[in-house]
Image (tube, rainbow, N blue to C red):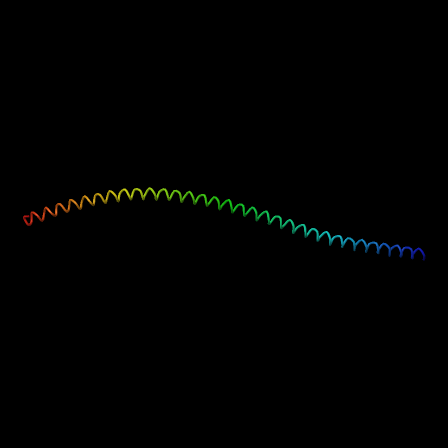
Length: 120
């Protein structure tokens, strides 16, 4: 019987050791999973920062490109507008001089016509 008691005691000790190992393994697994969750969250935050920074940089670059293009277009428009205004002003001056000459000629012809008409 003492052999049965020794076997039972050994089984009880083995069960106790196994329970302790299982408990410690569970605690360790819980701690490891907590650390893994924290690490994943940290990595996620870093990736979001990098992505956000990259997107911001890309947006800045694109904005600068669009601003440069807008400046070029505005510069071209200003140049063309200046050319058109210059041409229009030249034509207005020419038109005004021609109109002045036409008015003088019409005035002279009208005066001449009325003088012939009324004999004066």
